[in-house]
Every structure is written in C-alpha cells, then in structure tokens.
Length: 188
Image (cartoon, rainbow, N blue to C red; front, top):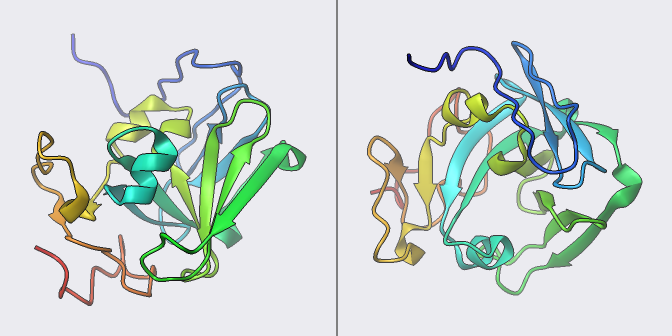
C-alpha cells in the first residue's frame, strides 16, 4: 500500500515528540528538542528550496551537501529555545564576501538556520530539522542545486532540479518559488 504523502508523518527522531504540521505551517526542531521554530509551508513566507554543494555547507553539515529552504524572517516564529541558540559568524569563505551567521543549538549542536548579510530579511533553514518528514518530499522538495561545481564526482545532479554552477540567487532571494530566476548567467 502506498504511503499517503498528503498527511503529516512525524516519526520519533531525537528528543522532541511535539512537532506538528498544518496546511500552511509546520515546525522544525533541533535534535535534543530544546529549540523549535514554526515556519510557513507556502509563499510568500516560504521563498525557495534548494540543495547546496558549496564548501561551507559541506563542512558545516559534515556531509556532501545541505538541503535548505529560505523563509522570510517576517514569517519565522521561535516557539521555544531562542535563548539556547549560539551563533558563529564569518565572511572569509562566503562567495559574496559578506558575513554569514550560523545559529546552532547550544545543547545538541544542531544547525537550525543561517542568516546572510547578502540576503537581509531572510533565514536559511535546514530541511532535515523539519518534523513532518512528508514535507521533505512535497512542499520542501528542493527545486534547485547550487554550487554544482563543488559537487563530489560520485554524486550526480538530481533529475528535474535546476542546476547552478555557483549561487542560484545572485544578490536577490526574492526570486524563487513565485517569481522564478531572473539572472541565468550561472545556471546550467
């Protein structure tokens, strides 16, 4: 029998068991459960979804890529644990040369989101922190792969995803789900 992806699937994963998902909003929780965010699952608050193969995302996730989604800060809600967030900022390895700040749970170390000086008013969340696993394959399914020039050779592009050798966003994250890309110079 096929799994119904239209209904929430929130398995026990980590220390929290109170994640939720409704038609237009859901939660993202760190591994230990100390931090929980609510975010929109539709535009205009949900801006875009993407895979990133940049060297920073590879290093910060201890994996070969990161699966991300961009949310307008005006739609991001800290339900609990804001005081438990620790941050680390740097600009040396960021392609734009502008500061990127990473917000981690101080208890379990989960990276909850990143905030880039180049993209004011937006936060970049990790799809893996989302409590409803069906959203990973539906509303949060990545649309684009960026920094494919840094993708490992044994991993191939995802069929149907837009492929960008560098950033897919230029200096404007307002492109995305509703407006489409306006600068295709780095898209393959």
